[in-house]
Amino acid sequence: MPNVDSIWNAIAKLPQPTLRELFDQDADRVTRFADTLDIGGNAILFDWSKTHLDQDLVGLFSQLAEAMDFASAREALLTGGIVNPSEGRAAEHLAQRGTGAPASVEEAAALHLRMRLLTEAVHEGAMGPVKHLIHIGIGGSALGPALAIDALARSTAEFRPLVDVHVVSNIDGNALEAAFEVCDPAATIIAIASKTFTTIETMTNAGSAVEWLQEAGVEDAFGRVVALTASPDKAVEWGVDETRVLPFAESVGGRYSLWSSIGFPVAMALGYEGFAAMLDGAAAVDRHFAQSEPADNLPLRAAFADLLYTQVHECQSRAVFAYDERLALFPDYLQQLEMESNGKRVAADGAALDRPTAPVTWGGTGTDAQHAVFQLLHQGTVEVPVDFIAVKQPGHDLDPAHQRILLTNCFAQGAALMAGKQSADPARRYPGNRPSATILCDALTPGTLGALIAFHEHRTFCNAVLLGINPFDQFGVELGKQIAKEMESGTGGSFDPSTQALLEKSGLTT
Ligand code: F6P
Image 1 (tube, rainbow, N blue to C red):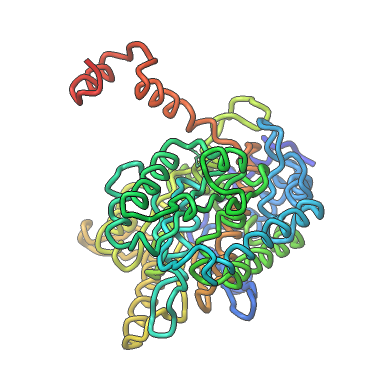
Image 2 (image 1 turned 180 degrees about the vertical axis):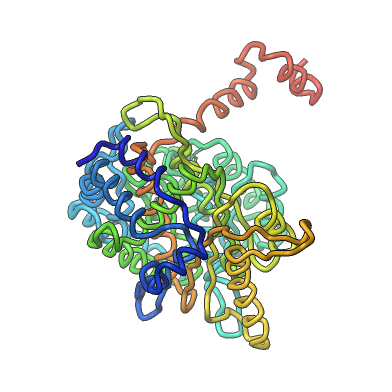
């Protein structure tokens, strides 16, 4: 087996045919690079045919996977091995959906049962009238619930969420006040979501939410609070009754925690069955990921393309456009998943890396983004690989023209990026040969959303394994937090002159 450097050299030295040439060379390209997964009767198509992957590249990247011992890394993820060496931990989000290590699956099932019983009890009135739920958390404790609620719990002619959920993350009081404006305190419960139960934004917002209930005359304000956490003792110490603490395992990472009790607001809005269907959809992708050979493994194939673009084409960003309003928060979700996981500069063993790691993930919704940022994608000087995510079945009852126009625009953008256009006028010329991948779901259901998220989790993991980095720690977020704490408490002494001046000008210090 050639060593890692020689495989990378071989990848870099391969000829680089254009997308058009790749289609001309291989009549079966679409069948070869577009595959479907069945998620509870709904298909999801993963079409990577408009990327520059070809058989030679897949062969070399498969060799790279072997040289990086991808099989052992995947096995460790699936069996609860230590995949987060800097913190000496497993990453057990798969156990939440029943596909991880048996002992952890059992523990997760017991905690899910506790969550289910509390969800059902609250629906039946155990906490008094509940029309609204304010879910307070940040980062991984907010982005997943926010995405799932926005995608699946919208009121439509056929569907009314069981509870109206507001996800509040920002410490800026405007965020919490906006939720207070639309919630009736007498019919509101508060979910405090924090793995550590120490995060300053969450704890400050939680305190203000309890005060809001008290000021509105709610008798037992703490009786209206549920805690979702891996630190149950801290939640009890804070004042949450033990019976309303929904714990989850320490080995579930923050940005992978939607599958744990952090999903409580999803269960409250959809009913527990809806949340369980998300777990099932994710589990279907876990099985595909666990069982497929490298060349057919969809998250791994996506990582091959990601690495081709960051390492060989030197792309510094990847854009994701959801051509479905219900998935508007998907790019935000992916930003944390990908950038907090793989935005690293050292390998898992601490050695400095000599190649780029995660690109910047950014994006938006189609067709809005077409009228804002697509100019650069088509004619700018940088190459940005694009992912399109679309859903065949619309989530509304309006004239089918809406959906037709939405989908044709999505497909037209991919076609235009690839084909480009010649023109005598340089300003009107499109270079083309710009890559995109398209994910097309039959329908947006709890199962397909769970599958979409799990696919991206595994894609992120594959990128990390092939680069040799640890995707499960995030020390890079600590320094700024620590300095803010020192500023807040006045214990930091003096800062650099620029920062000191800002503190003085804003009246925070003299
Ligand atoms: O600041 C980073 C981070 O640790 C994320 O990884 C995490 O999702 C978020 O903060 C929130 O942490 P917690 O759930 O402990 O409040």
